[in-house]
Amino acid sequence: YSTSIKPRKGIKRNNLIQLYRWKSVLNNNLSQDSIIQLYTESGNGRLNPKNQLNIPHLISTPNRIRKVLFKDMDYWDYDMSNSHLSIFQGLCQNYDMDCPYIREYNSNKSHYRNLWSDKWYKDIKYIKPYVISWLYGNNNNSVPSNPFYKTLGLWRMKEIKKDRMLSGIYDEIQIGRKIIIEKHKTKSGLLRNIMGKETQPKSTNGKSLCFILFGIETKVLEIVNELIGDKMKVLIYDGWIGEEIDIDQVENKVKSTLNMDIKFHKDSMKQDTFILK
Image 1 (tube, rainbow, N blue to C red):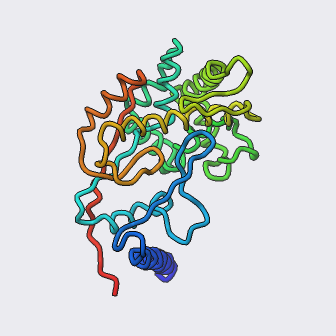
Image 2: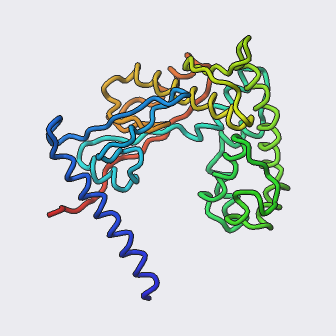
Image 3: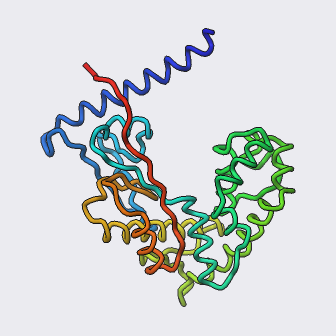
């Protein structure tokens, strides 16, 4: 039993360290008993945590700790559902490319994630990043040089490559990525994303696509913020923490503005906690 107790002690210690750190920053001169969060704009328009500050940021804070911080405030945690593949599908659709496999997966992701997890005896948290990695330049070859080879193993990677749905998603990504990148090139050959950011084409098509998709992700959150205003309390990459809002209204606004079917998921921030003394 000792081997199972030690990891739990480590988790408890790490949680306590983070909670004590958050407790200490509430005592500040700028906004007493409030959380200070500062962001910096990246080259693609995405807002990242401001670095080199002696205060923690909610973006890099585990969700279990966030729930402790926001307990009893009746806030909700919102994020885009399958954000990058949904944006990718929306772009392909706008450029007259149909993606039946990606569309089917986005529409029934829970079904397929459970199916794959049961089929290959692996938690979906290990399979999902592998699929997303195809957007950004990774291949589906079952070779030791693949970054997911150690995590998934040879036999799983071979089965994934043979799977009709996943191989279809992979093929659509290869074709759609080239179309999207070409559509975002200016006359001078630069890449320009929806946030008005420009850059030289990246060293790989995956990095170029990242510049484009992250720009649209940021634009979506900008549209949401314009709609709900102060009900958005904290921005967290492809989501936010804030007051309860009408998700249908938000999805319809994004659809009418960008012509993309972006869905949102919400999770209550309520959670039992304990008192630090």
